[in-house]
Picture 1 (cartoon, rainbow, N blue to C red):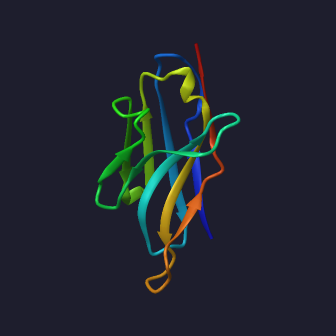
Picture 2: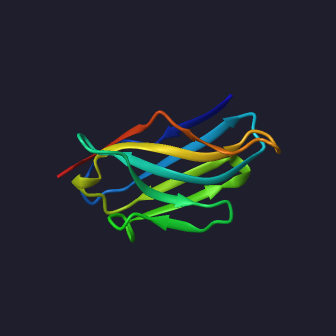
Length: 121
C-alpha cells in the first residue's frame, strides 16, 4: 500500500506565503517524478510544478517566480514553497508521485487526498 499525505494548507492573505509538504509512505521500490497539481473551484485540475528524480523542475507559467518545488529523497517528501500568493491561487492542492512498487513492476501515478489553500484579498 502506497500513501501520499499532504500537509501545510490553510488560509492566508494575498502577498503571504505557505509551504506544502507531501510524504510518501508504504512499500515501494523507487519514486520517479513528484509534483503538485491544483483544482480551483469550478475548474479542472492543473499542473502547478513537477520535479524529477534528478532534480529537474518545471512550473506552470502562472506560478513561475513565486513558487518553488523541492524534494528530500531520503524522506520521500516533496515540498512546495508558495510566496506572493494571490487570490487566484485558491484551490485544493494535490500531491502526485510516479512510483515503482517493485523492480519489475511498471511505475504508476499515485495521488494524495488534497489540501485546501485559500488566499484572501
